[in-house]
Length: 127
Image (cartoon, rainbow, N blue to C red; front, side, top):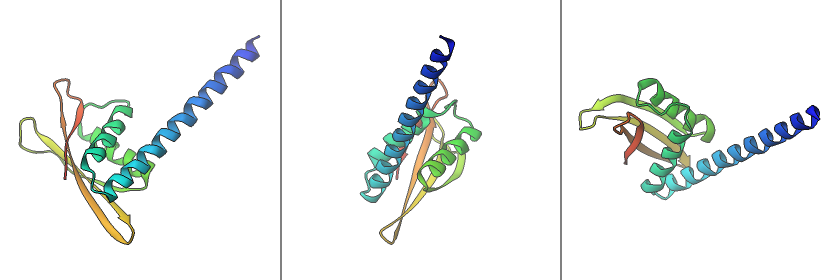
């Protein structure tokens, strides 16, 4: 009986893991397509999904680097945190630079990240 339960748990874990990988693959494909078509709204939506997947989405410098790394490592897109909490607006903002080579040309975007009342990262703008 115990063996059957372990097998079921392992199967469920495998199914969940495969679905998570598929979600990431879809996010990355959509992100690259949105960058190629200059669809800033979709880029922002996908970055928000990456934020939602983070263990902690608190607006901290280390989480900003984790977000950039998650996008870069999962999507094979070059990313860099340009600055943390450096744009003196209300609320203040940080910037992540993303770069993708597509059809022989380089596509670059800057994502402005800010925070909400719970200090959770939110996408403010894409340009």
